[in-house]
Length: 238
Image (cartoon, rainbow, N blue to C red; front, side, top):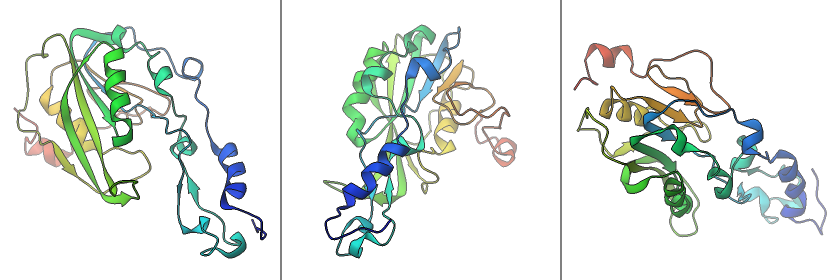
């Protein structure tokens, strides 16, 4: 779209933003939670960032005279329906958790406080940082360059037993893939720690053997959580 002398980047991309943003009425579009209780819950909530945009130099008039070049904009809300904290709290996760249950939750730096509040609202106590993912790529940040995401862990009741592997590493350094796609290494690590427990992934986008799942984008076919090489070498054995 060509601009004029009075154009600003916002006046051009605001219309695109409104068209692309996906609204998410949780109770209307998500399926019911399973009528079953789990020992391990793994969640990747679709956090809402208040319409925060990602952009490049195409939004700077001196770099893009008259905005002749198409302006780049992106946002989490363009990729999938996001949910505000008050709506995430409506999800009755407590109803599917055993008395003794561990919750693993994906979060980012800006959402860390909300994540802890959400876990507590679901009936859990915050415990620690389970995983730190170094994405090997960074985004501009207001304070420091942002290149990590986190999985924090909560517990309800006692620790589920029997416990599996105790040598799963906290730091995972793998290059980022598609937007919001998480490395399989994390769910592999959780499976190694809790191989026999009943497990479910919430807001899932994959369909792993040994796990139940819930969400909007789950493929029908199951995939192995470990490669043939890992299974042959018994890398996940206790």
